[in-house]
Image (cartoon, rainbow, N blue to C red; front, side):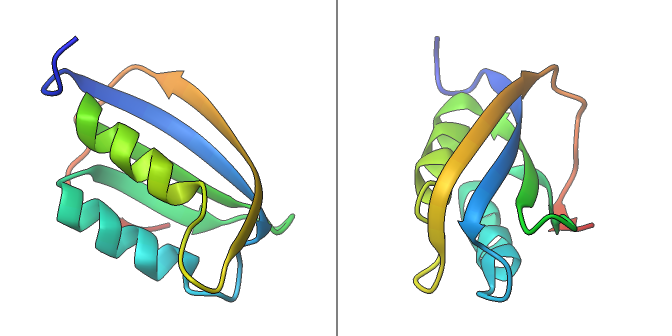
Length: 93
């Protein structure tokens, strides 16, 4: 498949991922890559994100998410494919 095919994934990130600017850096990385969607902290300590955009860009942000920002310590990540919904912009929920 070509990198321009639009895909959407929902990601749950586990580990030391809250209180380390994970959401802020996710927004920066998504904006750099032209990805739409959102990111939020969950009450159980995980971070949830939705990434939508060209397949190549989504694969790149997934690779970044596996380690996150400098102060984070990602211990696990689950990825769930979804149908693209035409998200616009990227923000915090």
